[in-house]
Image (cartoon, rainbow, N blue to C red; front, side):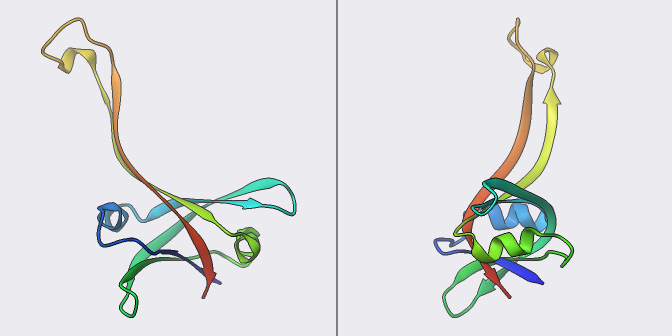
Length: 116
């Protein structure tokens, strides 16, 4: 079972490049039947639809994973692409005192799931 999510307004905002480097994403979909969220980690790829110039996120959800059924009846699915992250020590700042922080790169795409 392939589940694809379409992002209609993409020219290339950077998330497709992030996805190319970090293709293991988090998909979250609200199941209105149960009133709960369904969450899965899924390997995906970004493909360009040459007829509409949109980018399609395509990945495979196993038939044993109920997420694909939820996607069939859900109006929206959230796809979170997590890139690199790292702790930033206060000692790395020139100006002291400083506080620790976390440096990260992430992108969120919300779209309608499509069965393929």
